[in-house]
Figure 1: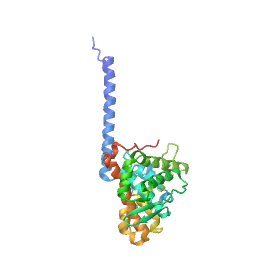
Figure 2: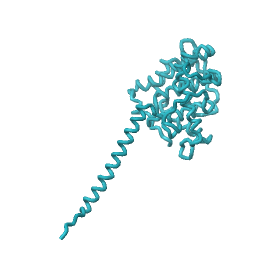
Figure 3: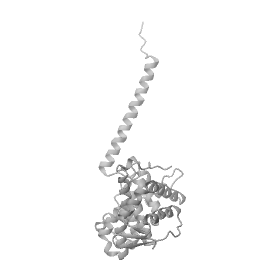
Figure 4: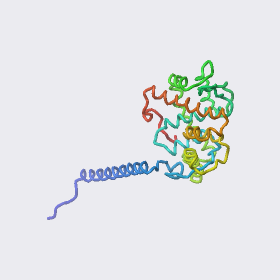
Amino acid sequence: MGFDTRLPVWQAGDSVYLYMMTVIFILAALLALYALWERLTGNTLNSLYVGKSKIEEKGTAIPFEGNVFMNYWVLEKAKSTGKQSMETATNLLAAFLMKWIQEGRIEVAPGAKLRIGPEGSFEDSTEADLYKMFVDAGGEYHLLDSNSFAEWAKNHFSSLVPYPDRAQKHGRDLLFAQGYLDKDKFPLPEKYPEMSQVIELENFLKDIAQSGLTPERPWEDYLVTGVLLGCGDQMRSQISIQLPVELSAGLDAVVRIAMGYKEAVKREGLSNWDQYMFTSSND
């Protein structure tokens, strides 16, 4: 008489469960190793948003005609770690200050200070709300410097700190309305070249002297997007002599003042930005 070699039902079920868990563990390990490989090799871009995991090309085109919100969304998504970046959020504020200097809403004052003009009118309500914050931060004398803005940001932490998340969502909505994104709010494959221009311009501005490229527009046209891309220091050292005096001084002031945002975060005991900032998503 032969032996019944079939496993009891509970043992068979356990075997399936263990098999599934082993597969899941292996897949998770492979994904972790892939992420580590990307970081070590510099392939840190999210290809879902720019079509590539690495972009080495340099370009002089200003993406989306310099729209700060749209460029901010692409930049954050392309370099996404799952959280908003404090560095890019700081650059977002500096970019708008630079924009308002060029529009004549803000004047550059001696000592790396800015004189904030009246609120005026804005076509974009999201931008207008940020300007109102800076008007409030300017106080009775309508002046901003790095210390006064850091103090204001600390006292208005709950109002200011969520703004970058709102700005990113607004940029996404603008891109969607203009046909760059699909129904799930991911870039259409045919739009990858335009999305990639954000990274290509960053590559150019980070190494202007060695790029071998000639800008296709006057240098002042690059200031707002360049500051957003974190290239304010590079532009200040390499092209400030080619800028009007007020814009050169303004470039210095906006970088200093926007740092108050980061200082406010640190004063609140949130030096680890990932513990606070909103999860980056397409929702």
